[in-house]
Image (cartoon, rainbow, N blue to C red; front, side, top):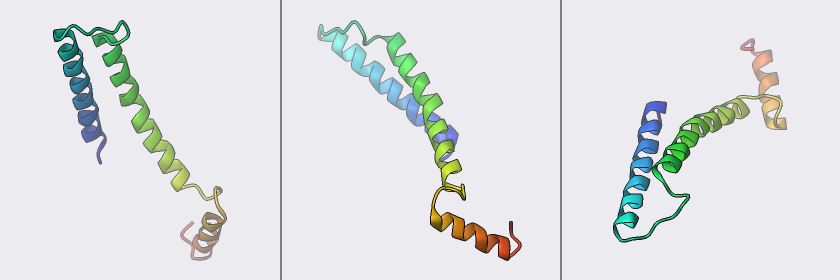
Length: 83
């Protein structure tokens, strides 16, 4: 999934939260912490965190010091001249 598509899904989720906020306001239910500003802040955190988490996973997945299997793969790559 591309980063742009991920941002679109996060924006869609933020829009859904806004719709819930307005629906609850229409039927007279209000929460002090559930405002447009809190929704925008939550969406901003998701936009920053999810790509960061994906990058961390990529670094972990491509690291050769994490597991014994990865260390073995690194040795094979070195013997074949690929590393």
